[in-house]
Image (tube, rainbow, N blue to C red; front, side, top):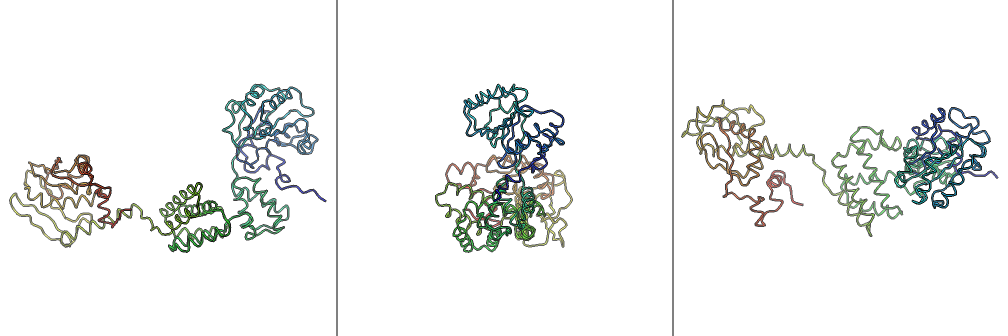
Length: 547
């Protein structure tokens, strides 16, 4: 009976080019081998299952190989076969987790004094080196700094931050990266073809994604699926085995969100729980689903989405149904849900409540749309206040005379409700306090059109009088005074345009004016956040309601 060898061992790389996704490491090591610039100590760090120990063994074979080929071991000489079989007297693989004490390191220090038995180098590969104790690291320091000429150390770790800086500084460090879904699926496809296994594209992508950046994990799952399904693996067969929800479930949920069907959402959650799926995995899967929609929506491309071609087409259609603000809000809500259910004693209740909220919430309006709506409503309100006439021009008569208004057939300035006569200097024609008071509402309306936030601030102001060429403006508090002073130039241009004469504003505090939301009213305890001028304007103009 032929001995069975698991995929991870059977298809272990035998030369540097076979290592998937770590060319930045393998090219450097090959160049060092060819140029004879080898260091006495290396440290390989990175996630599990990405090739750290495999690369260490390749390096051990390459430095001891009798007939290396362009930096690669020939895998045929006696030393290469001994290292591959794990029976070499010159290559020692040590598990840092089970040999972590100072006594083991002292034994190692004694052993490095002896020359290699057959090869050029005596090599010590210490896996999970971060598990060594502090005392063991200290015992290793001196040997690591000045090792015998024919000794090389290769350390591998998944938690580089736990390795003392004094150790790292004495090694050449290589950071191994997580593998992409495409790299893992490509490797599995090659293995499946060599093994005569027929696996469809969706199943291959599912296994690669489940590997989560680790080729070894993906290969282990591949072995498991071959045992389950035989030589033909299809997507539908492996969903329950890998405990992965079908993509259709997530598309059903986004359909329910668009239909605002809370009842259907609760039924779907009950279906997921009834089939034994983990709620946290379900929420994470939905976050990835919304992320894919958001990516397609913002990039107009499916190149960044890891799924089959048919799935990418569905994401293109789904992206057209959602806006970016809505997708961002849903992502934020799911992130909160995922964080909360970790510590919840009843995660189902939290997930159901959050999903009902997601399904029931209204679509988000962009800031630009809100500003446009406010502007349109302000224009409509001003037209109503002016008697719904198309437009009018204001001609100010000399002091003491009445203001004469003339209707115009069309409005020449679409941004302003009034047309302007030629500007007159204040010396040419004066203006009375009565005229200023009568035109003050028009001035405020014009400010609201051009500067919405500033118009809201000036709503509580009043005309105290006219002194020379200055309009004394009564203000409720220092904030309004400072706002007028900061925007003095813009306000003066609007004022002179409305009054049709050279005149300016002089703000001053009016103790008789007390507006809700100011410090005076706050002391009495009558003010609430909903009485702020901007909030009041939103409630009045847009129909906003307090939460």
